[in-house]
Image 1: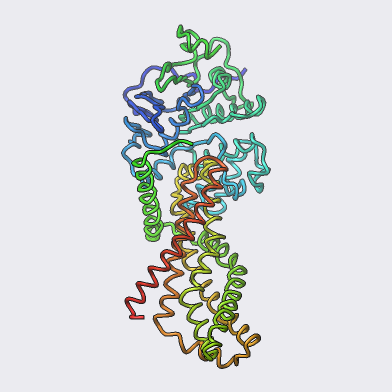
Image 2: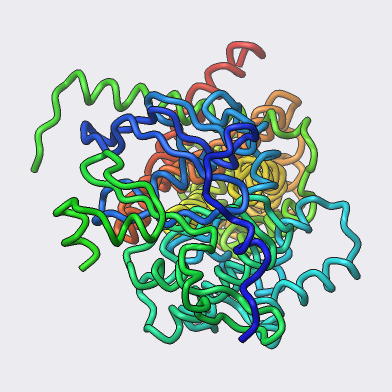
Length: 282
Length: 259
C-alpha cells in the first residue's frame, strides 16, 4: 500500500499561533428577519486544513461560507480571510480577495447560457490577461482533474447533477485558489456520485494542500475524508493505513442554535460525551 | 395574509427607492471603470434593438395610420384636411412615437431583463459571479442600460418615420390627400423643439426600462414564483414611469421653449 501523502504525515494538529489562519471568525453574529442564525461564533481554519461543518437545516452552515466570501455582511464580529478583514472591505476590494478564494455552490450555480468551457474559463476571460491558448490548456487541465474533458462544448442543462458539481469544482480550481469553500457538494446526489465528488475534494486537499471549509449534511462524507487519503501514484482515494487515523488535515465543526458545540478532530468527535452530538453522529 | 404596519411599509418603500437609485447611479458610474464589456453591450444591443424592430415597425406604422384616421374626420368638418400631415407628424414625433416605442420595448425587454436576472438570482448565478471576482452591476446591468438607451433612440426614430408614413398611406388611400402635399406639410411643421422633445424622451425611457427591469430582476426573491412576480412588476412599473415622465418632460420642454 502506498504511503499517505506527506502533508498528512507532517500534520500534528498543534495550535500554530505564530502564523495567520486561512480563515478566522471572531464572535460573528447574523440574524435574518429577527431570527438569530449565528450567535457570536468563533473558529479558525489553519492553512492546508479541511474543516467539515455540520448542523441541521437552517443552522447557518451555508451562511458561514457566504460570510467568509463577503457575499453577506455579519451584524457583529470580525471575519479574516487570508489576512484580510472582509467585514471592513468594500465590494470593489472584495473582488480582488475573491480571486484567491473559490466556492462550489450547493446547486453548482453554473451559468446556464454558457458552455462548460466558458463556465470553467469564466474567471480567466474576466481577467483579460490570459492568452487564448493558455485558457484552453487550463480549461483542459481543470476538466481533466474532474475527469470531464469530453463535456467541454456542452451546456449545463445537458449535464447530470453530479457532472454539474464536478464542472463547478473545475471552475473553482482553475485559478488554484488558496481557500476553497464547498457548500453541500454532495447534496441530492446518489452515494456513488457523492463518493466521486468527495474523492475530488480529498484529491484537492492532499495534492494541493488547499485550505477548505466543507458544509455537508452527510456525516459519512466527512468521515470518509477523515479516514482516506489520495494516492497520487494510483490516482485514487484510499483508506489510511491502520494506526494512522487522524493524520489527515481534517477537522469537524458542529453548529446548534447559532452556536458551535464541537470543533475538533475525528478522534475527539468519536470520543465525545455530548448526548446531542452522539445522537447526531450515530 | 400577514398585515404589515404602516411604518414598516413606508420603510420598505423608501428602501426600495434607495436601492433603485443606487443601482441606477452605479449603472452610469461603471462607465468610467474598466472593463467596459463592449461585447456584452453589442450582444444586448442586438437583442434589444434588432429583436424589437418588428414590433416597433408594426406599432409605429399602425399608430400613425390610426392617428390619421381619427384626425381626418375632425379636420374634414372644418375643411382643413390639408393639415393632416402636420398633425400626424407632430403627434408622432413629439408624443406617440417615443411613448408607444417605449411601452413596446418595456413590455418586451423590461420583462426579459427582470426574468433573466431574477432567474440568475434564485439559482445563485449572481452570487457565483461575485464569488468569481466579477461585479454583476458592471457585467450585467451597465451593458443593458447603455444598449437600451442607444437602441431605443434609434427605434423611436424608425417608429416616428413609419408612423408618419402610415398616416400618409391612410390619408392618401382613404381621404385622397395628395402625397406630396402630405409629406411637405409633415416635414415643414417640425421645428427644433419638436425634434428635441421627441429625441430626449427615448433616452430617458430607455434608462427607465433597463434600470427598472434590472432592479426588479436583481431584487427577485422566492424562487420561480418570485421571478414571475418580478417580471410583472417590472413591466407595470416601467410603463407607469414612462407615462409619468413623458408628462413632465413635455411640460418641461414646453416651458423652456415656450410652446
